[in-house]
Image (cartoon, rainbow, N blue to C red):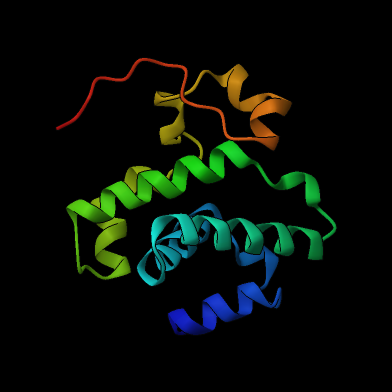
Length: 133
């Protein structure tokens, strides 16, 4: 399947739900960020995720803080690895693909991400993280 077909199937809610893993979320965000400026990519990604979840009858799955945080983390990583394929990006940024021990644990307390507030609106990170230049 091409990247264009993947995006189209996702946007039309015809992509198989069982194949839409965390790494597929990251890939989709990466593709949107390649096609659009970050703010537009975020808006389109949010709309597509909400529509896809609704098509499955699972509107409660959408999480605003996780969505925004990943979009901007992926965008930041893309700036340091420009013009690479998805496979290269994934290899260089494997920490973004690990859901079990996900990168947001470095930035957020578990209670914050589990809160209803973080689910419905973007919450800034609440852990101090050493700045990387």
